[in-house]
Image (cartoon, rainbow, N blue to C red; front, top):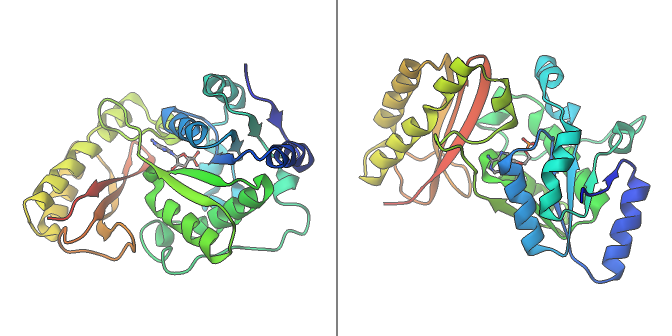
Length: 283
Ligand code: AMP
């Protein structure tokens, strides 16, 4: 059975108040829709960890720094509801835009430090948009736990810090990235790739694994990053925005895998911006 789609905060609160009155825990999975197996894995983790699960679908205009990207973002609400049906989700919250940003909305949530690097400078205003909408969704759903993908690792850390700093009583849980058999991280943006673009995109994970293997033998990151850049260009990527090795907790730059780390790559294939990251164990 498909879960009920709720479009107003009043409808949502009727449910969440009842659940909390009954002593049930609530998990929330914030998404922008166009659901794939990555999103569904979060719904499954939420179902395993909580009595009730709310999946939210909201294409948040405030986190798009590029109007074309916002206009092209895939919207597939009907299919999304069908895909969620087997997961026993209790409600799908698809808020009307005025429920999120009523007239005169004037508040921005901004997380310093963690947003100064990687996606931050490349997407001005993006993390303010994310932190603002996620703070609202946390407060609107009154959830006890929230499930986010490590696919957007920097976002996961930003959201966790925001909830902690603002004393929002929610546990932010990170879940592993779900990949295609080729290793390509699942993403709603993959739908925008042409067959040729997809062929290029599928090479990214191999290049990243090669860097991780080198780091595992104790090699320095700088020459491995240079080699990876050349390999990505050779594979057909048109632009590489960054290849970074960073501490998994603080996101400080590392020159070697000296502590638990993540390798981050952002590059363009076939006119689509792809981001990915993998864990790197310390040697
Ligand atoms: P989005 O709809 O792209 O905003 O993503 C909603 C949530 O799904 C975020 O927490 C993402 O990190 C997560 N997500 C997106 N792709 C994947 C994936 N391939 N595996 C796991 N989680 C993902």
